[in-house]
Every structure is written in structure tokens, then in C-alpha cells.
Image (cartoon, rainbow over all chains, first blue to last red; front, side, top):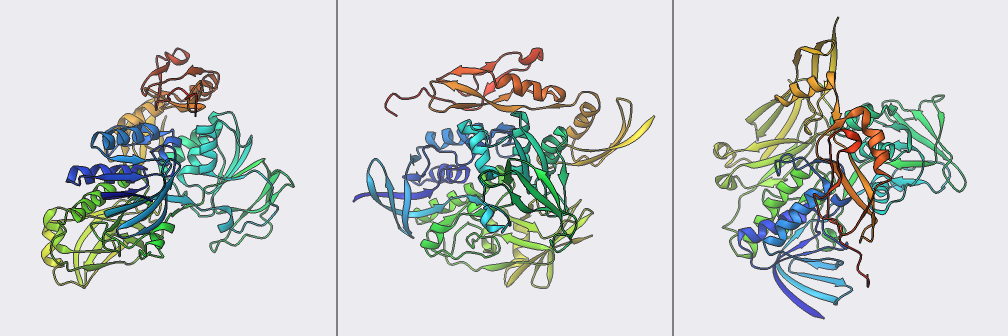
Length: 423
Length: 126
């Protein structure tokens, strides 16, 4: 078996992997390699042909392919090696067995690994929709790939279940391609994607949107002929008598994304059941020494700009680990999700790290508050900081920065708890 | 006659909800915008709403069958469907470079459509 030594091995050449590898090189790691199972780098971005990427990370409003190419270019110019059509078969802290059609099996011995496998769409099987099993049921991202990259229209009249961003963007895309979107149904009482997409993808094209509504049946023998939509109560139970039949030939599902951690589990990385991704500290180090993780594999971000930012930090940490610059022993504080907070990343942090700069806490709330909201960070029973936001919504990740000034209050604390309550 | 209207700004991902008082096509006052771009957005929204257009065109002889394209500036909103329909009939020949102008002056709007990625020519052996 061919053997390959490297300083930093990055798994996945999507936006997280490209940024992590780029930054690992800039930090000083000599030999940085990305392995990517697809034919080309870029991850999901080449099929996201809409704009809105990079406003924060690059100061320009770019399409997905443009954002990908900027980072592919940056990574190449920094001397990052990208092995495409390469699949990771086995993974431990300092060893990865990969396979590709050029060299067969390759044994890679890295000093540090960055997990950047991204996420997958929640499939139909996870929803338990009753009814027939005809052709014509797709996840929104699969339909996006067919329409935007392969040139196939999956159908002509659609119902979309779920109001996530990919579903809304596909509603517009299919309309622009001449199809009819009969209705978008969302089980929650609010839209689950970004507000700008509600305007420019749904309202601009007069697409009917029904909240508190779900698919309760799928009709059709060979091909979808109709779906049954029902109103649900606050516990998501269909309201008897509210069923209506909506003729369509295609049902798209936009019902959430799940971090893709099969390989992380193989490597023994501990996974947070709430986020579905690895437990990480402020360096994006996982529970296994030498394995780092960044981007949607850790928790699903709203914006690629935030994926890039987290991956730059992870790439820096991985390079420092590979170069033996990890520093001395750490004293860690655990972070906990308090009132109306679903999860916080990182899961633990060393207050000493604030000496090198601010640490960003990313959190998602459980339920929306459409009024002034106070985000409070408590170190044991002392209030460390408080931020007032105009509203909070589960669809919009909240970012709070801890700064050097907070360090003194953090020393000796055991737990940081974050709350999001109406002010 | 003055009326109150609510807008959600689409300029950036923040998506501010802006409450505006308007009279005809004139903006009288507004609140809720986090930055100045919100003012420009509402002004344009009540006079001549515009949106970016992203779609695909077909590629002949390319490594990929489709080329993603984007408008170099926003188009009048009412022209989006007609513009997308016109672009469905456009074919380009590979190779294409990123940023290449694919359609000049789309539907007489003065807006160009540009390639969002490179598409190399199809390799004979691939």
C-alpha cells in the first residue's frame, strides 16, 4: 500500500475544508492535503447557483460557485494539495486509509486531522409520511443538483414540505425554470429559513405558503399524483377534518440538515446528541487528541461565511498541533445551554485562550421571541455579560463574543450557562 | 394618501423588518433598518423593485452540461420570469471562463449575464 506523510490532513473539500487547509498552510504547516470523494472541490457550493454568499467573509455578494472558486484558488495558491475522487475508508488520530481510482489504497499518516465532512439532508425515511411509495419524492438538495448541474427537471408541479432555505430557494428556482410550485407547507407556526428568502423566493413569486401544515399522505402508484396536506395542532398532530388533496407530480422535502459524522464515530470522536456533531473546544479540537472539526460537521450553520470563519480557526489549531505548538496544560470550563437555548458551540473553553483574541460562542434558540430579547452569559452564579437583541429565531444563529476582559471572571469558574429570555 | 407598509430587507442575510410610512412612491419615514442600505432598499421597493437573477444556460462541448450564470446587477423584478425564459434558449460553447459575459444587455435592460464558474472543454478520453 502506498504511504503518504503529511502535517495536516483535511477530510472534505467543501468551504470548511478549503478554509481549514488554507489557514493551516498560512499558520506554517508544511504539508497540507485535502481528500475529497467528489470529482471536484467546492462541496455543495457548485450547485448553489444563487447569490448571497460571502457578504461577510469576502466583502462581496457572490454565487455559490464563485465563492467556491475563490477558496479553491486561495487554497491552491497557498500550496494545499487536493486529492479528488478519494474516499476515506478508515480513520484514527494519526492514520487514515483512503482509496482512489489512481492509486488504489493509500495509507496517510498525518500529524493532525480536520474533519470537514459537512452535513446531509434529513431523508423521507426520517419523517414517517404515510402513503404510497411512488417515484417523484426528492430531498430539495437532490432536486437542486438535478436542476442546476445535471439539467433535469424532476417534475412540473411541486409541493414542498418544509420552509428551510434550500426549499425556499428551490421554490424560486423551479418557478424560474417554468414549473409550478403549488404550495409550500411548514409544520411549525413560523418559517424555518432566512427572512430574506421568504421575500425573494416565496412572496416575490406568489407561492402559497401554509404554516402549521404537513403532508399526511402521498398518492400515486408509479408516480406521485397528489399529496394530502393537513393542519396540525401545537403538538404537531393533524387536526381531523382539515385534510385537503393537492394535485402534484413531485414532492420536495426541505426538512433539516444533519451533520455527517460516520467517519468521526469510526475515529472514536465523542458526538453531542443535540447538535449531531463532535463536542469541540474553542480551538475546534474534538475529544480525540489531534482531531479537529469545523463547519457543518460540528453544527449546521445558516451562512457559509460562518462556516469559513470556524474552519479558519480549526485550520490554525490543527497546524499548531502538527507543529508541536499546542502550549501547556489547559484548564477548561464547560458551556451549557440554559433557558430557551438549544445548544452552544464550543462545548468547552480554556479562559487562557482569550489572551490570543476573542472567542465566538454560536448558539441556537429553541423558540422564537419576536420582541427584545436578552442573551445572558453566566459564569457559575455571576453574570458575565448581557446582550440585547431585537428578536431571536431558531433559524438565525446567535453569535456572542467573549473577550480578554472576561478572562478574570472566568478563571476558577466551573460552568458557563447561556440564556435567551424576553427582556 | 399615506399608508403603513412592512418590508423585509433582502440586501443582506440579516433581513431587517422595516416599518415604513409611504405616500404614493414617496418614503415619508421608516424604522427597523439596522443600516443605511435598508433605506435605499425601501425606496427602490416602492418605485422600481429589482432583484438579482441567477439561472443556468446550456453548454455545448463542456465537461458539464450546464453553466450557472448571474446578472451583474439587479433586474426589474417584473422581468425575472421573462429573463429566465429567454436564458433557457441560450447555448454557449466550452471552454467558458468565470466572469465571462454570456448575454449582453439582457432584454434591453442594460444588464449583462456572467458565468459564475469556469467550464472546461470535455476531454476526449473522459
